[in-house]
Image (cartoon, rainbow, N blue to C red; front, side, top):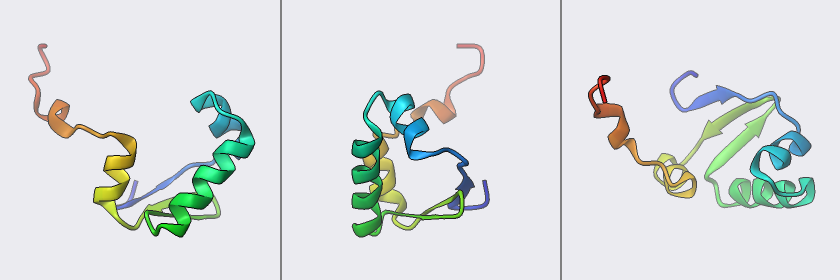
Length: 71
């Protein structure tokens, strides 16, 4: 991962399978986040254009990053 970008060499079918949604629905979600300017997809590379919205969409909670490794 470089800054706000990372490689994701998955097809929409694979993304759908991983999320337990159809490839058609995965396509619609990807199209929506592109149109809303949240992320950009380009040749297997994903770039977060709006990190806050991207984290909200993913329901990301960064608190785990600061936990003790012994927990």
